Length: 306
Image 1 (cartoon, rainbow, N blue to C red):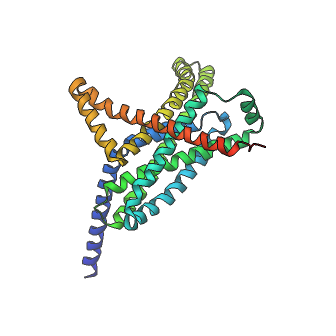
Image 2 (image 1 turned 45 degrees about the vertical axis):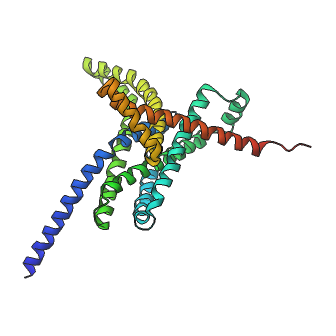
Image 3 (image 1 turned 30 degrees about the vertical axis):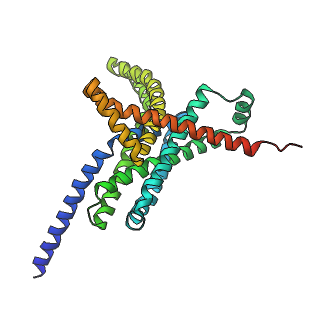
């Protein structure tokens, strides 16, 4: 009798693990696009840090990401049970914030602040404070992207039991965090790998290592520049995508635009149309929030007339 109960228990555990593995694979596929954006955004966020502090900064952001998910997983489960209607508005706020951050980057690039303000800000920031701000910004952005990943995963396992939902969310949270920040760490240390290979080549006379080292050194700054650009684009794509899926009118409009592109441009149009729609919407939404933000700030800082 005891042996039969043990076998039954083992069979139940095996079935449970198999279900979790299957649902995790499905959730991973559905969140793959967000993960690409997450990688680009986080690699961009740690640029500008001194070489000897790159890995500590990545580790600090990774710890913040784990904390984000430790908050988001139980919060998502509780909200899905007690306040399911709240998930979409919270995601919309996060999407608007991503659009706002992307628009702020464009404003800073194409409409820079007066030189005196830039000088004052730079003088008041030491390296430690600059690093702290970079980490805070990266963790803040990670929170929004992590929330989207958690919600997408939650939608994938909506029909499962609460235990299965919790296990799948936990598996996705851990795997995604390790994967993203492992890749980010590898990307930011490409130049160091190139220098190491060049040193080895000088000692051994290995031509292949020399060429590979030079290639990595040449590729590293270009890759970081591309990721900085891709990270800003990702803010608009992810933020705009959240708004589109949260507002039914925009979602239907996107479907119409995609159908029109399919008829006139074929498969390429069908693929590009939703991305362009999300991106343009993200830029417009971000620009609107930036205008409102700067108007509010101006009103607060405006001195009252004597």
